[in-house]
Length: 348
Image (cartoon, rainbow, N blue to C red):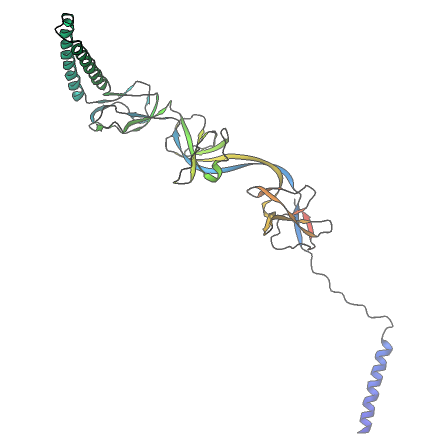
């Protein structure tokens, strides 16, 4: 037993001696772990751009001047209609004829009363110098003649008004007169677009209405027209409509055939022109302190750079607070933090 223990100890001693004998005097080199890959980010240099801010709105085609043609004789029956929708008429043209029977009776009645009053005045006036009648009676008869004459002229005017005529030249775009119907003085029988001029009425939200200026350029897309039409703001209403919180804006454009009142139109109105350094819209970040961009320094270190957003259109943001020398991270999101070291790659 002792012999086995002695042999085992001898073997272990020999193995240890062999390990020591074959070991190098040089220290064993330290194995280093390769650092993880550095994040590559695309960077851009802010460049100055000029962008026109626009607001897109919708609306309808309307007459520039809407002329209402009404009957000036109450409760008169319409005998005939001479104008249809789409007709071009001149001032004074006959549009409709009303029943004159009742008016003619009134004229005849007033003519008879006028003749009677005139004869009575002539009789007392002829004897006023004799003292048979007082001056007061003469004056009374004279006033009666004048009153009846005024009523006769009114009846004759009503007779002339049974012929409904165009008060202005233009195009008839609405007709409500029907043969056999009654003409009411408060209801338009026809509506005329004066001189046939059509323009667009756009509904601009109240947030942008105050920024629309007269003479502003507008691109109009009119239903049925293949190409956009250039227009100019003619009038900005000073009133906000409570029903849709929008202000009507009238836009004039060159006249063209085929336009229909009430047609749909879309307009892009130029609001302001901004010239400032531009960066990709994806570069803009926000936190509690406000808007900022990530920038990459000379050593590839990320830094937070505050900016003021002036205008954003599509994929471009115009900002204040940057210079062309900066390298702005085009798209970072939450991938980087202030102080991170990255590999910048210039955008193509």
